[in-house]
Amino acid sequence: MMSSAIKPPAPAERFTQILSVGIGGSALGPQFVAEALAPDNPPLKIRFIDNTDPAGIDHQIAQLGPELATTLVIVISKSGGTPETRNGLLEVQKAFREAGLEFAKQGVAITQENSLLDNTARIEGWLARFPMFDWVGGRTSEMSAVGLLPAALQGIDIKEMLAGAALMDEANRTTVVKNNPAALLALCWYWATDGIGSKDMVVLPYKDSLLLFSRYLQQLVMESLGKEFDLDGNRVNQGISVYGNKGSTDQHAYIQQLREGVNNFFVTFIEVLRDRPPGHDWELEPGVTCGDYLFGMLHGTRSALYANDRESISVTVQEVTPRSVGALVALYERAVGIYASLVNINAYHQPGVEAGKKAAGEVLALQKRVLAVLNEASCKEPVEPLTLEEVADRCHASEDIEMIFKIIAHMAANDRAIIAEGSCGSPRSIKVFLGECNVDELYA
Ligand SMILES: O=P(O)(O)OC[C@H]1O[C@](O)(CO)[C@@H](O)[C@@H]1O
Image 1 (tube, protein in one colour):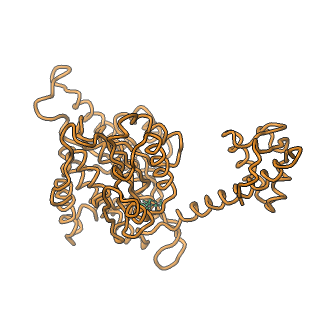
Image 2: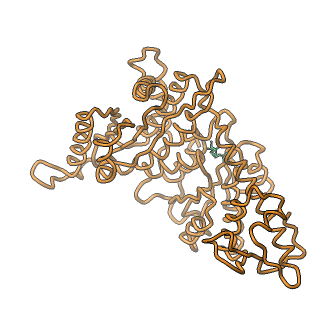
Image 3: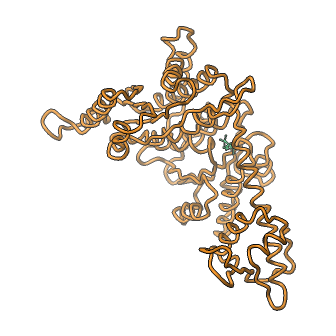
């Protein structure tokens, strides 16, 4: 990539679209950068599968239609074992098989060497594999192959992104705090939130192309700073909540509450000085352009909030370019690191996420037991529809009866279980069985 060997294709070359499969730090940076910087008619248009929602995946694949044949699929996962990403890959591979296409010729993996994904891509002979390094965190991977490969293929100048990030890093190396942008930002967060996350960070870029900045920052800040224990093992429940969208759009949504409601936030205004590329501006009323209105809205809101004791930070960039976006990414990555040091926590792990993943695994394991019990009862002659209590008893999981109900309701909604009596609106009334008896199938 750095040698510029990777270029977007010329028209009528082999690929026309990119389908990126990844989640969290393996999706949010590329999504933000595509929205911020991709040209209006990129050489390769990018779309994302970033969830294990089957309908969402179907929607992306349906929208590709016959262009699946000319779609480069980039599967991104640092660990190479994230279930949502694995499921997205399996769904896409199924779509390729059904279309009579060979996935390996169009698949690219970005992952740590020897991960499950890396080994799959190697054994199946995918088009290419790009390494992710252990020391690059998922949420700080935008400037690695994770962000740079999709960006380069969309015709975005990745050398300029890196140059912007490098300039910002340079500025952040000074030990003179008032000249160090990341240290200043981190100190502002500390000041605004009393160093305990007492207020939320509302991120408001006044520029449509920066719409996804707040989503990107949400993971960067909250997954890094939201920690139960500090580095000395004290329970601290640290973190700063992040939300936002864009101005002035949000002025017509929730700014009313920010100005007059509960004072539990600070705003970060992202101001972009250049409204349009040179030579395209015009005055829609004497002396005033459309961009002047945006400028007025930003500064009007900022003053109105200030007048009511609501604090804000303003970050100003000249224009939205690969260089300024690279600089913004580096600024926030460093500010998060510095803030973590200020409050004595580890910004670079995420133990809390593991709890949810483990619990999801337990739900799926319970579902297999429920299926085994229902299968046995459904294979009887005549079929034996079971109540919730009966299913729970036979699963030896009476304490999980609510979860068993959820599992059955989900299966019934997807035609994988049949409600013989009662309705899901009144759980104790239902009797359930499977439409088919799968004698040969081993569910447990
Ligand atoms: O890149 P991976 O390993 O698939 O992980 C995806 C995301 O999952 C997390 O581990 C937990 O949400 C994030 O830190 C990470 O960005």
